[in-house]
Figure: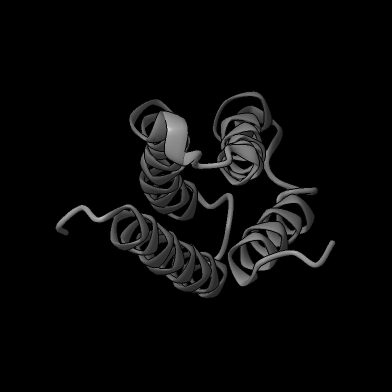
Length: 128
């Protein structure tokens, strides 16, 4: 199975952050760094869970709602990643240039996720 672009971007972002935080200051490894790593993994997990939900016409409302819950969870976690990445930059865990790259890819993920949500709404006949 070929991953959607959204999945590829999220995996790239996760991998990038894992690499750049390998040698982060010890005092932040068990707080900011661990939290960032867990959030990235949660986002990817929510993407996969949402993708596995087949929006069935016989049970349209509940299947759509379940998928949307996973998508919303991923979106919330992406927003939290933005906050923690900024905090990491301010504390010297990551460089400003690294923060910019994280922000750019996270923004792309948010936009792609928004497109996915809009596509689902259109497919089932909801207004945006």
